[in-house]
Amino acid sequence: MKDITRMKTSLSKEIESLLNDQVKMEGNSSSIYLAMAAYCDQLGFENSSEFFFTQADEERQHMLKIFKYISDAGGTPISPEITEVPQEFGSFKGVFESALGQEIAVTNAINIILSAAYKEGDHATANFLQWFVREQQEEEFTARKRVELFDIIGEDGIGRYMIDQKIPEITPPEAEADVNV
Image (cartoon, rainbow, N blue to C red; front, side, top):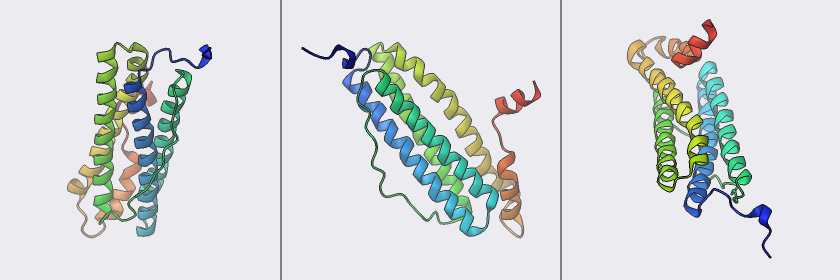
């Protein structure tokens, strides 16, 4: 007789697999952001380093959120193996360009899972993923704005220092609106 408490209630094998892939992607993102923090710290860009430390923690929290969702739905979450994390990024600007690319990749992966959930009629997973959709809109916005600083301020003279000073000031539009309420 099967243990009914561990039977899946809403996750198909495909959705579970896609979610576990996302767990790995979020864990990988966390590790990459840690490497970015260390890289910025070595260059002396304290604000940027702190920003990437915060991002690393956020990505880890995203990983845990998905991991727990899989478990709560009766699935089998898989703790990811993280390997081949880059330690060099070519330049200060390159770190932020890599971060933007990373956020775009995460957005695309979330969209794939969401599309599969809609296709299967898995409304619970689709509803769960809506938080991630909104989060990715904010992450891409702020990542793009940080890359734009390099074009606006430039890297000559004290440009990189000024960019580092501006990094913590960039917040998503909704976050700014919430502060004013």
